[in-house]
Image: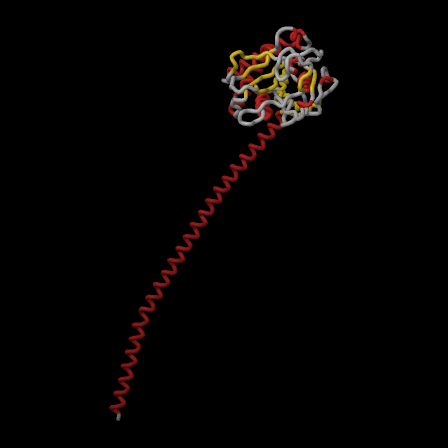
Length: 343
């Protein structure tokens, strides 16, 4: 009995030792797995932190670039604002109304519109005012008539109005270019480009028309120019379609040159026209071989300052911005030459 009890006790001890060994063997891989998992988590955490640092760095760089861009844009905006302020101070604008009591003012039929006088504010401004007359652009102008000459004598040449007529259309609507554009639109574009160039040169500028329509007939325009300018240049394109080049309307010879105020000013009209043609030629503008065509114009018949109608091409001529810039450049050269030579 005692022997049997000893065997049972021995078996129990062996079983306990075996069980303990198994637990030890099982604990080793558990510990290893736990360590591996902990290392992976640490590595993952480090990668996440590295990515966050990278993102933050990129964010800072983007912010700096954006800030630099904003600074450049702010500087550009400030420069533009400064330029606009300088331009605004460069001249003063004044609307000019027609005075029916001015010399020859009583002959006008359409004169409710206003011209615009630009007074140059530059320290080196020139002492001359140039009148730019963008031809046509008076709604209803063809429904009124005015005397061709202040003395009531008949017209000596044919043009828009026939030779021998006592009265002429107050102001014509103008021709249409081959592409359908109205002459009045192109003369307005050319006038604005010429205005800007003259202001940069330091001249004062009287703009007869700055919009699609101004209620001023040919006599009203001429009277305003007589009052406020030193010379009068009207801009036109001829009604032919051969791209014949630019020319000026000269003063017809004969009795017309003996009629006042033509008698006192026709030589000045001629010199102004020739100077402008020379300037246009120098700038590369195509010129009509004869340079001029004599026509009895209302403008010439009432002018008491140097005055000329410039025909800058015809229906087939190029009137792109580049061409108009070239024309304006040539006219400024001609004006400069004329004033230096004659005034």
